[in-house]
Image (cartoon, rainbow, N blue to C red; front, side, top):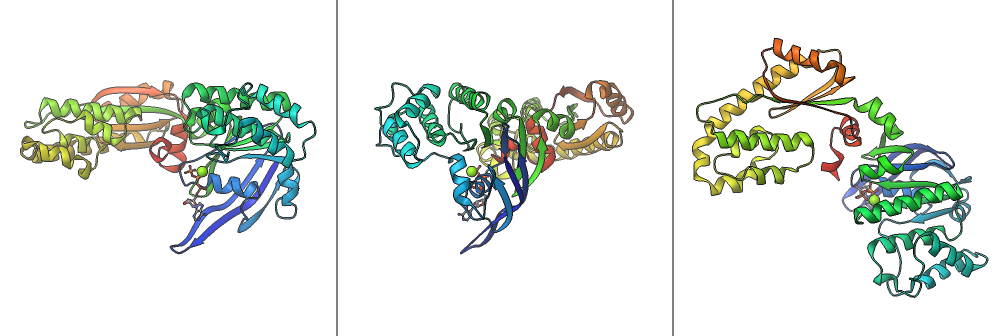
Amino acid sequence: MIEARGLARTFTGKHGAVEAVRGVDLSVASGEIVGFLGPNGAGKSTTLRMLTTLLAPTAGTASVAGRDLRADPAGVRRRIGYVAQGGGTDPSVPLGEELDLQARLYGVPDRAGRVAELCARLDLAGLEARPAGSLSGGQRRRLDIALGLVHRPPLLFLDEPTTGLDPQSRGNLWDHIRSMRDRDGTTVFLTTHYLDEADALCDRLLIIDQGRIVAEGTPEQLKRRIAGDVVTLELADIPTPAHTAIAANASGAAGAAKAAGRAPAADAVGVAGTAGVAGSVDAAGTASAADVAGVVGAADAASAAAPANAAAAARVARVAERARAALSGHPAVREAAVSGRIVRLTVENGERELMGLVRALDAAGVELASLSLARPTLDDVFLTVTGRSLREAA
Ligand SMILES: Nc1ncnc2c1ncn2[C@@H]1O[C@H](COP(=O)(O)OP(=O)(O)OP(=O)(O)O)[C@@H](O)[C@H]1O
Ligand SMILES: [Mg+2]
């Protein structure tokens, strides 16, 4: 349904050139729901706008819905539906009129019948007289999708279909997208930076970063092939004379939040918002010095504790390095990354290897405070292929 080779787009402006898309190859088969995943600015919308003929590529070729993108853009446009990021409805026009106008533009026979059918299919029945501006976010997104489907295209492009919707509306929209594929065989190519959406809705994923496709496969394949299991080790606290109990606790909390991959740095600082803990937040590697400055300024005790904390941080770093060195030679360990007292390992067959890893650490004289094993998530996949977390990037 889509075959693209070397698709590229460079924007040239006053401030120089931006290589938004740098040679993308992609194939999408008929009836697939394919997710195009990547952080802000990765090149998702630019790729979509090229594939939908809205933007001319600076290089590359593509066949879309059986028509050549460059030779027959009008042919492509007749066979595809496109729902832009943010939509494009006029807020003052009633929903029914908007759909009818779209049907007229495409020369759809039996316009009234098609509009009624779409309203029924997308849970919009009864709202025909309502101006688009008065609809809820979920209703407006379903209207956007209905507009893209009016002419029964075999291929539908959706740019961030569920951004800004509450979880229930997102789930509801996923059902609609699945039913389009299941009932009509519609091929769907959608962009998202929601990992749960990519996981639950898409048959196959393409991950784009900085204008290039960096990974591709089913969600399961990607998790198995790329990420491996994730073993998170927390190194035991190394007691130091001036290191207060509060600091140790705060550092543990910040480290744990970081390990769970949920809390951004600002949250970690919030957790550690007590006098004298700035150094330990630094040691956990979750907050920059600038971030912590406000906390330090407010706390007189912090300046006294700082040198001791710096020494503690250095000790933690030495032990962490010893742990990393002991483990990175282990045959099951694909990668070992250190952040403060947290060591994060990517391991094949984590369950089976766990005991061996603990023994290796023991032999190296490294003590652990805690240990956890997690199945890989798409965020781990993203971290592995791009070196960044999608959550942090998005
Ligand atoms: N018209 C334009 N002129 C100049 N630069 C542009 C233009 N459109 C996009 N870019 C740049 O190209 C890059 C890719 O943008 P694009 O909109 O494709 O990203 P995206 O993956 O859709 O991101 P988001 O998740 O934020 O929607 C960005 O650096 C963006 O600033
Ligand atoms: Mg975009």
